[in-house]
Image (cartoon, rainbow, N blue to C red; front, top):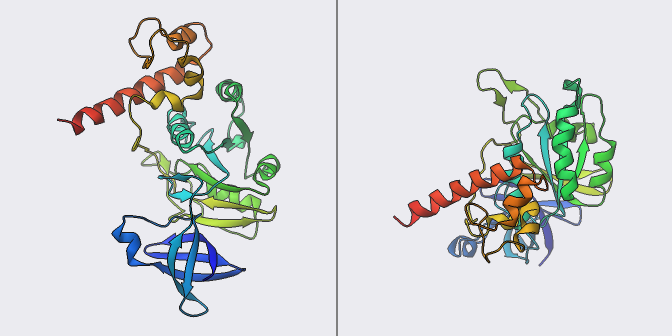
Length: 293
């Protein structure tokens, strides 16, 4: 039976590309029985019904996967955040980074709508924190077609675009591929946030020999599958100081002799990042306590 790549998922249908041909497939009942859901990015074995339809019979081993957005086998996650309309959201960025670090996927931070601000000093200072940690940051504007640096970072890779609604993910793809003409929308004046234009996860071929998954935007992201004892591992700046703490298993909250808190006081760890860690820790801890009541 042939092997292919799931490039799009819609309801219970999976669109599998194999040898430059696309099959509309359904998954065999055994996946539902074992609570396994095929994901965009999965390499699969499928059985042909005809030259347009088929059944997925096997999902090949995944090298990684994300729950939200639901995707597998990516080389990098491109975290897309606007500097205005909507305003840059460092809390949501750190939430994304926690999930991507847990999945073991390299991250690229992509700033959009640079044409909407006159002074980039504040955003540059914020990005300097992430760059010092080792994260790559690219700045773009789809309106001025300033996407060359991003294009180089996507070349030859399977990437997933993820970010808040309205930050311009679809506009970026339209700038990278002018013939694509994905639907775009601005900010809702009533809600003060972006409107959803992408409704499904789908793989899009780039001219530069790469694939990008466009995903629906959202404004909230919970910590499903992450516990309070391991949260610090997914803050790479906190994790590098954790083995210097006086007590093994230090949670960097109230413990004495905490090297992380000392690093925050000395300016070696961003106070804002540490504040986000404490907020996330309390959120996860509260869910854990509710679970055991």
